[in-house]
Each structure stands twice: as structure tokens, then as C-alpha cells.
Image 1 (cartoon, rainbow, N blue to C red):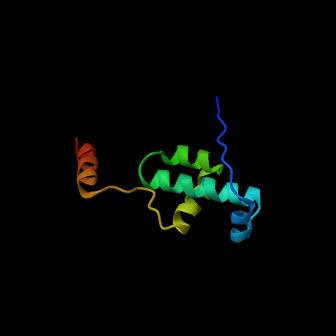
Image 2 (cartoon, rainbow, N blue to C red):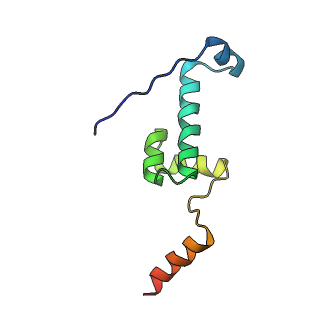
Length: 87
């Protein structure tokens, strides 16, 4: 699988304000970004777990901690999905 590296600069003062080191900040930023992408239906569960650098079980725990539903249908999507099971 091909990968790409994302890089951005952050001031040391921000890390100090957050009381985090580079690794902690990187992991937290990666997780928060992944959760937001998943919540907004940009990534599948499997893709999100991979991007977060977690196995699926651990990512599911993170979803629960953040009160993000694994399955999030609006009423019309749910109706359409249920109809597909009836045929």
C-alpha cells in the first residue's frame, strides 16, 4: 500500500499550553481528525480505524467515548436501507 506523509509546523508554546509532547499531540490530532471525517461520512469504519492507527475494537471504544454512532442514518437513508432487506 502506498502512503504519503503529512507535515505541519506547530510552535513549542502551543505544545506547552496543551501540556503535550510532539508524539501525544500528533496522535491526538490524528484521532480527532479521523473522528471528524468518520462522523461526516467521509471515511468508512475500516478506513477510519486505519487512519487512527488503531484496531477496529479500539476505534469503536473511541467512537463510544466521543458519543459518535457507528451507524448514523437519517430517516430517509434508514427507510431505504430497510426496504432493501424486504426484497
